[in-house]
Length: 119
Image (cartoon, rainbow, N blue to C red):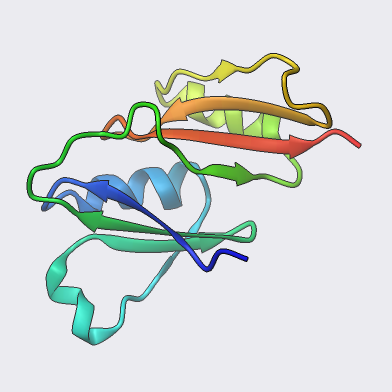
C-alpha cells in the first residue's frame, strides 16, 4: 500500500497548486508538519489519494512518469471540470480492461492519469 505520491513543483507556486488540486480536482489541503512548512509546496488528500507537491529548485515537469489516480466515480464530471478551465483531457483506449481513464497535466506540466473502474 502506498501512503502518498510526491510530485515536483516550482518554488513559490502554492496558490496555483491550491487552485488546481483543491479548486478543480476537489481535493482537500492537508496541513504539512511544522518542521516541513519552510520547504514550500503543499499536500492534498481526497478520493483515497494523498499527493505531496514538493519544491524542486531545478524543476522540470514529469511528462511521462505520472501517478495513476483511482477515481471511484464521476470521472466524466472531473474531465469536464478540467476542460472547462483549459486543461486538455486525453481519453485513453481500452488497453486497461476494467477501467475508463484519461491523462491530463497539472498547471506546471506534470502528467496525471485518472482511472475509474467500469465494473
